[in-house]
Image 1: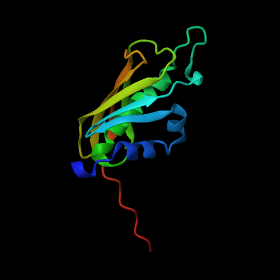
Image 2: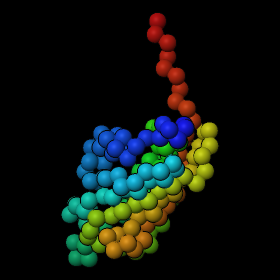
Image 3: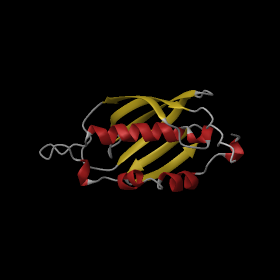
Length: 146
């Protein structure tokens, strides 16, 4: 894709919010550049895994790593891409509060690409990071109609 045809922040926001899970996470696109994205997720009480300690379930953090890395690739592919492999590291408990995630493309390939993401709490502390491999092969052409 040329720089002139990169999706805008508003384009990506509209596409992300088509998914009910993304709506539930309260995803907001904060910034988009070629191969980079910054998102926020609005705190939900349902994220709590331990009511006594009140920290966020790791699955929420993993989902944010995956979708942020995936959508960092949108500026290259013009579309969301399927996850092939994902690794997530947890750095500290994420206590109640909105989360912010930054993603960037590490390597863009014709078949597979690598992107990474970091998730920060509302104090700016790193709570999780990860790297994913995504299938960026061109979609198969639609079968010809008879």
